[in-house]
Image 1 (cartoon, rainbow, N blue to C red):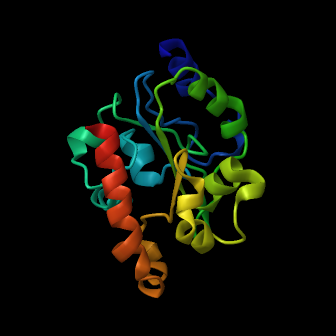
Image 2 (image 1 turned 90 degrees about the vertical axis):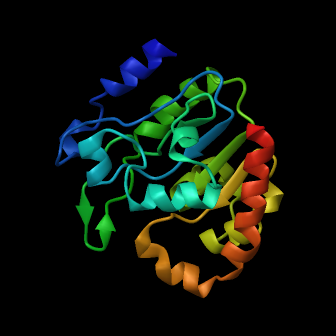
Length: 190
C-alpha cells in the first residue's frame, strides 16, 4: 500500500490541466472499513494537503456523526476522491474532477483494502462511476433510493455550503437518511 500511495502522490498524469499544479490528496490503509469517495479537493484542501479540511468536511463529519479523530483514523476511513488534485475554478464553482484519476488508481487501491465494508459515494461523479447502469437519473433519486445500493454503497449529496438549496428543497434527507447513515456507520465502527 505504501508504494501505491507514494506513486499516487507523485502522479503528474494531468498536470498540464491543473492551474495550481498537481498535489494528489488521498488517504488509504488496508484495514479501512469505510471508503469515502468525493469529487476532488478544493483550494483549501489543496493548500493544506488534508482531505475534507474545509466547511464541507465539517458538515460531512456531522452527517457521519464522527469526530475528526475518528474521521482521520485510516483504519476506519479511507478518503479517495474521484479526482486527486484540485481541478481549477469553473463558472459556478470548481471544475469537475479530472477523469484520469479514478481509472488509473481506484482499482489498485481497492485491491489493497480487503476489509472495506462500505463505500460512501458523495456527489453524482462518484455515483455514476461506481453505480454505472444502476445509477438513477439524478443525484436526488440516488440519495432517496440509497437502500437499494446497500450494503456496498451509500449515496450522499455533496456537503458543501453551496448545497443549501438542495438541502432546503429535500428536508427528508436530514430527517430520514442521515439517522440511517449514522446508525450504519456506528455498526461498522463498533
